Length: 139
Image (cartoon, rainbow, N blue to C red; front, side, top):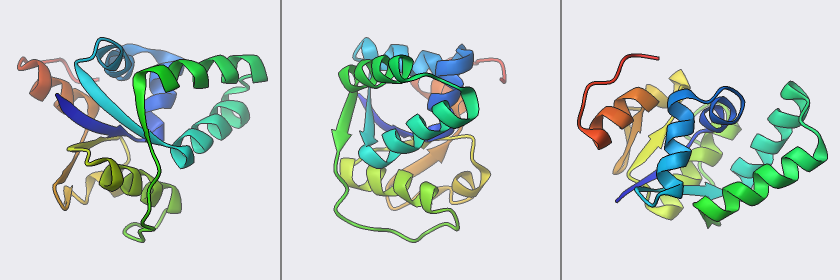
């Protein structure tokens, strides 16, 4: 089973627009992949959904509850300064602590890293192609 950390932009896409990012959440719910998450990632996700997408408190509560049921919560013990955006560093910290194999993201700053230790940075469509072993149309 692949262990992945999702960047906040993947959660935002999945929860607001569905598509391939939402497929990752479905795969986690089915037990096909393990999604690792930290409190910092959840806090950023809640902030973005509230401020940029006008989610109300009830919707945020139920989203948080639902994600807690399908994700593996970790508490990073190391603080990293790898990229310019501290929020991106929180993604890396979670992945390192959890032993994730992949960071799934649309963020070019993270994708440019290619790898960090044993962690591969990858886009959603490329991750799904790798896991499902078939060609998927680009999103």
